Every structure is written in C-alpha cells, then in structure tokens.
Amino acid sequence: MSFFSNRLRTDLSRNPLTCLLEERRGSGLDTLDLTESNPTHVDLPYPHREIADALARSCPPFYEPHPRGLRCAREAISTWLGHRGLSPNPDQLLITSGTSEAYSFLFKLLLNPGESLLVPRPSYPLLDFIAALDGVRLRSYRLVHDRRWRVDLDSLEEALEDRTRAVVVIHPNNPTGSCLSDEEAAGLLNFCARNSLAVISDEVFLEYPLTETASRVSSLEGTQETLVFCLDGLSKSAGMPQVKLSWIRASGPATLCEEALQRLDLISDTFLSVGTPVQAALPRLLEIGAGVRAALQDRLASNLQWLRHQMRSVPSCSLLEPEAGWNAVLRLPAVRSDEAWALELLRKGVYVQPGYFYDFTEEAVLVVSLLPPEELFRKGLSQVLAHAGE
Ligand SMILES: Cc1ncc(COP(=O)(O)O)c(C=O)c1O
Image (tube, rainbow, N blue to C red; front, side, top):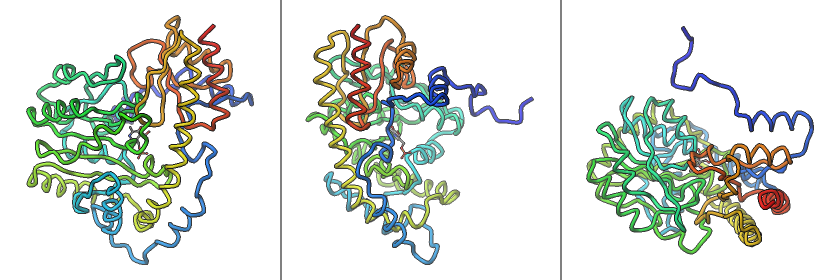
C-alpha cells in the first residue's frame, strides 16, 4: 500500500547519463555542456536590468484578476502577433503561466480521464508527464525522415482509437526542428475535422526559422473545420523562461470556440496562476524580447552554419537538417546505441542528449542544443565528430 497516487512512474531512479554527469560534477571535472537550452545561461548580452525595471514599474496597486488574463496583456499579444500577419481578438486569448500549464488546461478541457490524444514521435518528452498528471493517455503518430522530416499521415489513422479526442502538433517540432508544409497541415486538419478531434498546435519555436522553407505554414490558426488551440509564450519567443507567461489562442467554429473559452475560463479561474506584475509588464517585455530573440537567432545561425561546414568532413555522421528551433539532430555510426554514445562522450567531457530521451526509434541519434556559446559549441562538437569519425 503506497501513500502516493500512481499518476507518476514509481521508479524515481535517475538514468545512467544523469548519474555520470553528477559524478563528474561532484569530482570537479569540467564538462562541455551541449544540452544547454536555457537562454539565460548561454552568455548572451541579456537585459536583466530592463526586465527587472519593467516588472517593478508595472505593478498595479490592486488585484483585479481575469480568468483570460489582464486585458492590456491580451491586447499586447494581439498587437505583437501583427508581425506574423495575425490579429487575434484579445477575447480569444487566454494567458497561462507557461506552455506546460497551457497543455494541462487543454487536456482538462478536452479529455476525460483515460481518453487519448495523438502526439508526434520523436518529440519533446514533457508531454508524457503532463498527460500522466492529468490522467490521460498519449498515442504516437510518426514523423519520418527522408531528406526532410514529414508527418506520416497513415500513422495518424493507425493511432486513432474511439477514445481519441485531440491531436498535438508541434510546429516547429522539438528536437527535429521540422515544420509542417501546407500539404501536411491540410491533411492533418482534414483528418481532425473528419474525426471530430481538436488540434493543439505548439508554436513556441516559430520565431526561430533556420532555413527558407521554415516559414511555409505560419500558424494553424484560422481554420473553420475544427477547434484549434495555438500555444506560444515568452519562454521561447522572447527568450524569457524565468518570467513565466504563455498564451493560448483559440480559434475554430464560432459557437464551439466561445463555449471552449467559457470552459477554459472556469479551469483558469480555479488556479489564477499568472502574477499581475508580469501581465502588466507584458507590453514592455515583448519589446525587450525583440532584442533577446535577435541575439538568440544570431547564435543559432552561427552555430548551425559552423556545424554544417564541419559535418562535410565527417562522412560517417550526418546532420538531420533542422528547419527551425533550438536543436540539431546528429546521426552517428550505428556501432553502438545512442545511450552508449552519450555515455562515452560524457566520459570524454562532452555532454549530449541520446535520441531515446525524445523517443527516436533509430539507434545512434544524438541531440545537441544550438544555443551554447560559439567557442564551447565548437570545442564540444569537434570532439564529438573526431570521436565519431574514428
Ligand atoms: C516544444 C515545446 N513546447 C513547450 C515547451 C515548454 O515551454 P514553457 O517554458 O513555456 O512551459 C518546450 C520546452 O522546451 C518545448 O520544447
């Protein structure tokens, strides 16, 4: 008999890579960290002072919460989205304390316990935990790589069951960096409309295109075929994970969309988790975020360009070209598993993520962040490629 619910795995032990990393840190050994994706930790000129000033100056004297978030904050988001050619009605926006919370609200809105939603594979591992905490199940559809990543629409049909209620699209996906083409988006929306499924479109990396093709579909918003909830936030779009503010943009058939928003109001009102100062400061934070984003874009472009160039001289390895986002996926010789590669590289002082963290089925795939400072990135990856090319 346990004190605890079984929402979470009972096995709390750490994986071998994390154990080895802690061991190295404990022994004072230096490690080149190629997994860093926290924009406040990558040696960029960072506007700490401006952010602090914006928060200090914006705090209204009274607490007057609104379940969708302060109107001034929602108006600021709507205006900001103008640069993508969007102008959502502020009433169709709902502010949350992060994208993870937005997912959780939407799972509560759309799914009964035990029902399922379809999620891309490979992808970001956090969804497993959010789904487990909300008592819902994930079923995977495949992203396949042949020259570029694409959604395997047949695998969506295969994953569908009677109890499926929604499809998650991550556009651009993390860590593959793949964007939906117009054709894929149309196929996916058609599948959802035919099967009465809502769409949750995670667009947190849309501001970070890495190739020309990355902007083929700007957003999944605007279809009248089904309910679509687009997610975005300051964490990625403004490089400010620490301020904790994201938003849901609801769209779809008018009556259904209005009912969804009213139900979301109830969910949000139960928690009212977003602080007033950060909401009131949002117009200024979005302005400051433009500078952070530009610095991040430069860093990503510089590291990716260097990586592409280096890869040419290591024919045994390949880069699975990202179209957008903060990560790159490398395919190494399949002489050992991804975990064995990551452990071996860590013993040599370079920390990378094995593909299985993101549910890659293919062996010998590693994920590296494109955000670390250039010098560290080059040093670490030179070691990875030298070792993989041996
Ligand atoms: C695809 C994707 N969505 C959402 C998030 C979480 O965003 P937030 O910090 O706003 O919760 C992440 C974090 O890495 C992510 O990779």
